[in-house]
Length: 439
Image 1 (cartoon, helix red, strand yellow):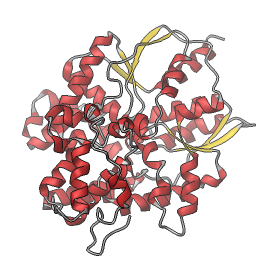
Image 2 (image 1 turned 180 degrees about the vertical axis):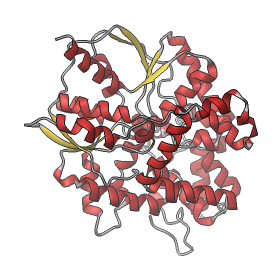
Image 3 (image 1 turned 135 degrees about the vertical axis):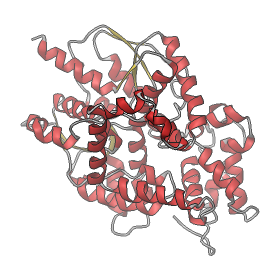
């Protein structure tokens, strides 16, 4: 990331990227924050105008600018809609990095929270697993039920009170435990391909079974799966929140851990992780030791649905009658441009009826940690999403991102819409298992 003489990251951007926006307004109907406020500054076009004003030296990156950059979801729906091909992702991430560089939002509390979450917790799988174990004990011992049932949650500070309903259910075993506990032994003796799987952070703590299902599905299709022990968080949380150097450090760790030169693909089943990992080449372009390896990495990163379609996955021969709708993860659809493949996977499952969801590609309000930092706006978005889910009449919602899953589960409880949230790959894995049981 280049800087100007005064250190300003936006002034250091390639100016042609900033000039791409034609101000045509095609992005406006796709932007969730603009739809809520109808304020030009809360639209992609408006935010780009602010970025350009700072790059031109006509505006300082003050608190109002910072608040607007963090009000943006970073869902990239505008990037899909843009006829000029504006690289909004780069503009958005650079703007947030400039906000953090200037410190205009600095408070002791904010800095302490960011330091713990971004610099300590999400840079260490070991610390994340400890947190997961504590969550598991809190939930499985009945303490969470007691706290909720007795109203003790009302004693928490208002900010924590609002977060408590979003608490996901922690799993007893991590992906590595499941892998070493039996899944690794099921790798095919004569594999067609060899891939590495990103286990993720939230995915590993809360949805490790989805990772296990992903491994099983790949093995069913003749793919050997390796799970690098030294892998860490992909860095998307850091890259999207102005911590570029930490994101680069994590990218280097993962490239070393996976050794992509010796894999056919690097597989992810989380839309946000995949979108970020695809751009390791951009992130490390100025690193002489990693630039070329990062290009190899980015060329090999594949979403699980995309990869299965590419290798010609086998349709299961058994299944059960069920109706499901599908919510597109923003970064899977708009970041990775993958939306047909998940539907192809679902369509291949016998007995499954896919009911298309109105505004399937409209953000649910999760957006990384947006539902934590902007709870009011996030709730408006999940309420809108759940009304569309209610209209389908189904009780099964498939999605391919852990943040979306947590938000949809919360939305179901909040709106009293009875839904079960699943990953498309888990439905495919269940069909393969049903096929074996029917023999």
